[in-house]
Every structure is written in C-alpha cells, then in structure tokens.
Amino acid sequence: MNRIDRLSAILIQLQGKKIVKAAEIAERFQISLRTVYRDVRALQEAGVPVGAEAGTGYYLVEGYHLPPVMFNREEAAALLTGEKMMAQLSDHSNRKQFGNAMQKIRAVLRSSEKDFLESLEENIAVISRRPPEDSEFPNRFLSDIQYALGKHLMLRLDYFALHSETLTHREIEPIGIIYMMGYWYLIAWCRLRHAYRNFRMDRIRNLGVSDVSYDRERHISLKEYMEKYAEPAAYPHVVKLRFTAVMAKKLGNQRFYYGLMEEQALGECVEMTFLTSHLDWFGRWVLTFGKEVEIIGPEELQEHMRVLAKEIYAHYLLT
Image 1 (cartoon, rainbow, N blue to C red):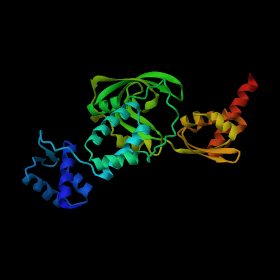
Image 2 (tube, helix red, strand yellow; image 1 turned 30 degrees about the vertical axis):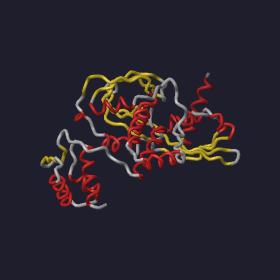
Image 3 (spheres, rainbow, N blue to C red; image 1 turned 60 degrees about the vertical axis):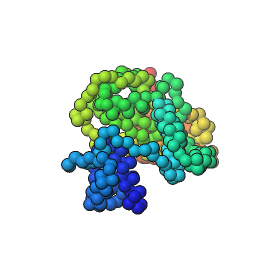
Image 4 (cartoon, rainbow, N blue to C red; image 1 turned 135 degrees about the vertical axis):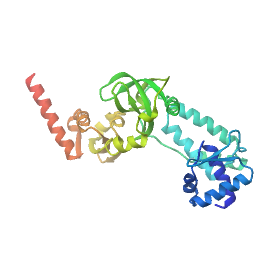
C-alpha cells in the first residue's frame, strides 16, 4: 500500500472510533510507531482536524466528516459474503438491520461494482445445519441485547432451560455475546443465581431492556470469561455414536439440540459426532435408543451407560 492510500485508510480508521491508539494503526498497516506519527502529522498539515490525547490516542474533532466512502470490488465481495452469512447465522433482528445496511452500501457502489455483485450473488451460498426455528421462541433479540451491552443496561428475560425443560424469569447484567456451535449465546451475571451464566438466545421467549444501568467495571470481561469458563470446559467431550439407518431417520431435529457436529452414512448405519459438556445428561438421552445405537467413544460414556442401565434395572426390579 502506498502512502496516499495509507493516509486515506488511517483517516477512515479515525472516523470509525472515538479514540484510536497509535499502536492500533501501526498493527493494522504493519508500520512503526515513528511512521504513524509522521502520517498523522501529514494529515494535520493537510487540514484534517486530528486531535491527540497523551497516553490515549488520536481522534477526529467533533463535526468533521469524510465524504461518502467508496468500496472496491474485493471489499464489496466481502460484504456480500457477510450478508449471506448473516442471513443464516444471525437472528431476525440483525438480519433486518444488516439488510438495511447493505442497501445503503449498494447505493454508493459504482455501476461496475453493482453489476459484479449481481453476478456474484447467485454463486455464494451459506448452508446452516441448525434445526428449523421453534415458533415458541421469537429469536429476534440480538439487536436489543447489543443495545443493552453498549449502554450497560440490565435485561429482563424469560428463559427456557433445555436440560430441565423449565421456564424461569431472570434479571441479568450482560457482559458479552458469543457465536459458538451454531448458536448465539448471551453471557451475563444472573441476579437470580448470583453467578455468571450463558443463555442460548434461541431459548429466550421474552426479553426487555430496562432503564436500570449497572457498573460494568464490577464484572470480568468477555475475554476473561472465555479463558476461565468457556475454553476448554464448555464442551470438553467428543462423542461418536453409530445409529441404525432407521433410527437415524427417526432422530429428526433432536440431534442438533445435543451438539451434533457431523454425520456420515456407513452402509446401513449412520455415524454421528457430538460435542457435549455433560456425559451423564447425554448418556440419559442415548439410553432412550436401546440397542439401536452403538457408542464408538469415549470409554467414559460407555461406563456411564453401564451405571445408568444398572439404575434402570434396579428401579424396575423393585417396582
């Protein structure tokens, strides 16, 4: 990238955030801090009102705006790919907002880029393996959650816990959102449980943003949460099962709810790989299939199944 292009890109970067650290600019363009200082000085000498806070970073003076940004062909293609992904991997609220944003982006593209996107659009597909959405859960709260995160506002929600099949009302202080294993998760401090909890967003029946703020500094960061709770403890067990072809068809969508990662047809059987955090809970589900399933691994799950089978046998022997 030549210097003129880099100066334009730095200017766009400055407009994108309230404060931009010199180290962020250096890292993005793979240049030294000395070069960053020279580039910022060049922008200032050209009349761009770039301010600086010692030890903090650079900023554009309030009221200064760049002319409409033009996108090149590669950037437009990347945005189109993002739109395809959002359509499959986000919820109803974000799909709508991203669609609106893309309309504005398309409006400023040159005619050649618009033609390029139209021809490219039919040749990009994103396929989600998630089950069909349950109409009982609206799955449209991501935008509200993002607003609450940005404003540090408490959320009130009705949440359905799949493992216990119960609906509870929660008041929570959100700390972040994670996309993992095909689902969005809301990470928050739960006032009911007095602990950090993760809530799968498509299990939220109702949600409201309150006008009650909370002190974000009292909580750990999302990065700290991930390091402490989510990796690798969230899904530590890889389970391989082999179902008969008949039983595999009967499974329907429930296999997705138990952490299905992949499946492969092997003659008259279907082998499925799952990720789960609770072998005991997972084993009770597997028990319902009787002889129609074979556990390939791990050995720990097989031992769980032996214990569960003995419990069931003893239970019905005594009744």
